[in-house]
Amino acid sequence: MQLKRALEQHIAVFGESGSGKTVMISSFYGSKQEPQYLKDSLIRVVADETGQGNRLHRNYLGMRNSARLPAPTRFSATSYSFSVKLKDGSDAKAMKAAPFDALRLVWHDYPGEWFEEDVSGPEEAQRRVDAFKSLLGSDVALLLVDSQRLLDNAGEEDRYLKSLLSNFRNGLLSLKDELLDEGKPLVEFPRIWIMALSKSDLLPDLDVFNFRDLLIEKAGDDINELREVLAGLVEGSAALSVGEDFVLLSSAKFGADEIEVTKRVGLELILPLAAILPFERHVRWAKAKIIPGQVAENLLRGAGALAAALIGRQLNPPGPVGALLKLAGFILSKEVLDAAAQLAGDKLREANAEAIAKSDYMTATLTGFRMDLDKGEADQIFLKSLK
Image (cartoon, rainbow, N blue to C red; front, side, top):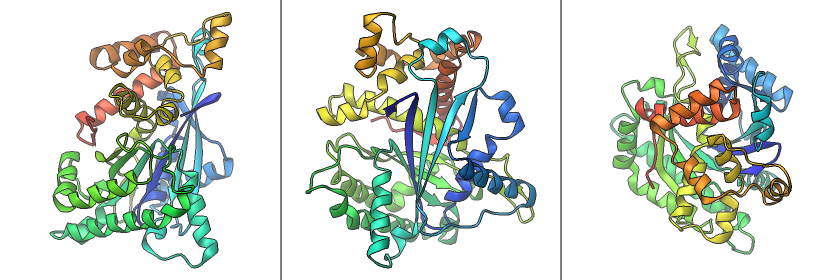
């Protein structure tokens, strides 16, 4: 977490070529520009680069209006930055007391070809390393499992899954020497690796528990081996979740002559997964005392600000105390962190309703994200690790 005027969260998306990454981000962004969403939602999602935003929106409109898929990208590592701003009408006093006035999501799209094919030469090899280094600040990584490939290998799903995971594992090993400075493990690195079923509309009878069970049965050892490789890259490897969280994703329902973009699955969880899941997990790891000091400092950077905003606590009291809190990077008491991390159930719904009634849209948005994750679990499209 990087605390600026906006609280910045990074998410990295990995998947083979054709696994639906471009379609997914186009659907994510385009759906946030629909008039009904703009009318009903407390937030506005704005692309920080206008050209990128127009391109993603055009991709979405092509799917919605003409059943036209976006052109595939190859060997193109792209980072997309989105500002998540509150709609007009938020209470001025609440906004002044809030530790930040916007969220920012940075979405890193890593080319699947770099895990499937050899690079063409030194220049491309360096681009691959640079692209991976650019996403090291991500809090969450999604590893896509392609539903179409599962269907193509029906009855022999292990062949596809083992190939996917071994390619990814070997790709990481090939980068290891370039990523580690003098062999020192990385402090800044994605710590939560979620297994995500892309194009889940193709497997409508598969809920998130079935998806988890399929992966564990057919490729459980391969997931463990991937975790070992990732653990070898990071300092404090006990603070690492690999293949413990699962989510179903679908950008639309695809027919022969129509793409129904309103029939999405899981994309509404992207912002909550980026903003709330790392906070919950990092606080839990800190309480369990499994995070080394430097790692804890890195992971909990900005956690106090998010905790304060989540429970609607005034973060910067007036006078010297407020100035000290700002200089200290919004480090709050254990009590505030615990209160935010444990906010759930009826108390969560009450906090959300109260924030909406007070026009405290930042707290309403963050508690709404928390509720979205709960709903994802109830709808069996998201399964969260208990570790």
